[in-house]
Length: 143
Image (cartoon, rainbow, N blue to C red; front, side, top):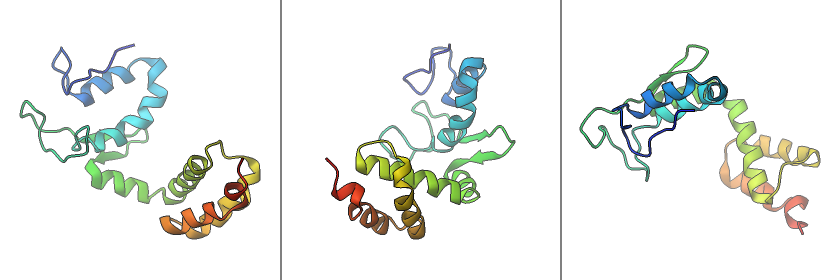
């Protein structure tokens, strides 16, 4: 399985997108990487600590465009945002589950269904979501 370079360019001179494309050519890696690489590449303008950049350290332009398996092209933060908006319900469902699991320090269980439904009413209002979690029996009665 091809390893991704720790640096912006591989020893062969391949940028991150090219390295990931090579990685996806391995059937063992393709199933997951075909899903996760395009959103990651769309965020490539951000360096490892979140600063915006337009070029790699060697001066070459950042490549922030990739294609999902369904043919959807994703370019930059704007492309990722537009794609996520087409999947808002799915995004929020996953966000709620991950936030709840993180807050409770455990996996989300079938008994959490009512709380997840209550969270759904709050949509993406973070303060309301946190309030729903911290006032829930799951949170207040945790061991």
